Picture 1 (cartoon, rainbow, N blue to C red):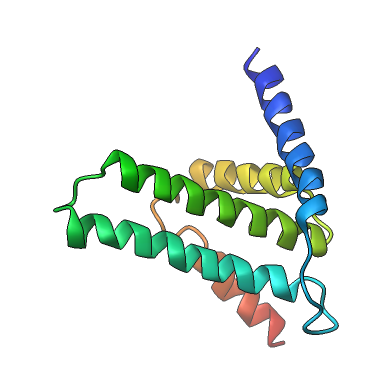
Picture 2 (tube, rainbow, N blue to C red; picture 1 turned 60 degrees about the vertical axis):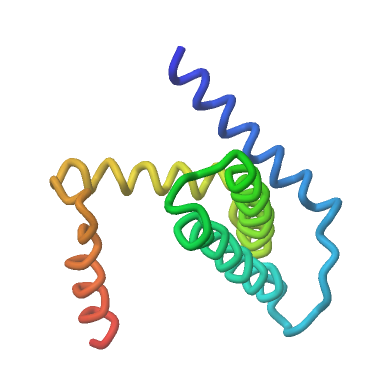
Amino acid sequence: KSQDKEVEMVTALDEYQVATRSTAMYPKITDSTYMYPLLGLVGEVGELVYKVKKIYRDDAGVLTDERREAIKHELGDVMWYFARTAEELGFTLSEIGESNLAHLQELKARNALHGDGDIGNNQENLRNASR
């Protein structure tokens, strides 16, 4: 049953990604179709962080219902731009999710889920790329 729910969730993510096409109206700023949604993604993540900062600045670290709703809105914007960036790069959300989960399982198997699991791989990849 758990696997059935995972399949349903993956299907829903891909359906969401397809649905974002109807609201994907952005200007061509370069020859790269992914650039505008990628820049939008970075901007929305900044807005999300700003909303969280206000919890500590204005509300003594207490997450109010109002702030929680504002964060939900920003997460939705992040999700939209993430979906559009992925599609413009030729990826489905399920493809990204499945790849990420496999990567996390591999890190878990190496007991490397504590934050620096990629460092060794990235350093090795950089060495190999410079050869």
